[in-house]
Image 1: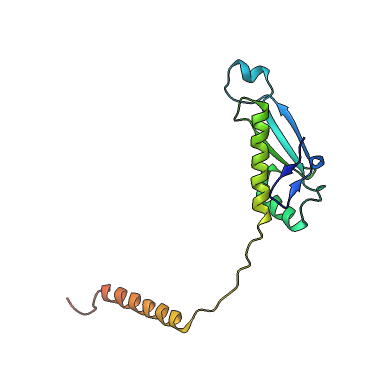
Image 2: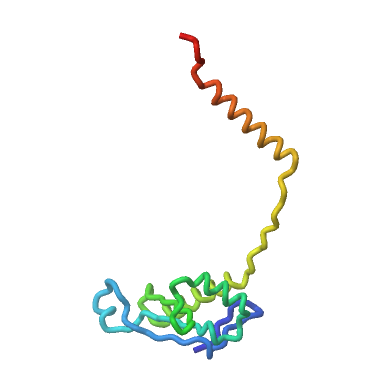
Length: 142
């Protein structure tokens, strides 16, 4: 297995990746019954040194059900009729997941509303209240 280049500064080493082929599910005629074209690619998430702990944490969150009990990330592909095409597809999916995990989310900075915003909010509330008050039936007029 070749290393998986993620970007110009990060490459997942081949020792952290493994894959296996099994028969695909679903329709496909004779080919699907005799050829193992479905590919499951596994990244040893716990054992890899290529990613920081924060990146691993984000990747775990992104992976969801793709994590196995041993701390590996599983990506499968079975859309193509060829094992090599499915392997390429699985590698591309894993690469996209890792790229997403490299981007640290921006911390939200709490801001206070301005005086003008407060004033507008209160004016809108007052206007809404007056509108609803006008809808009420006038008591004593029959």
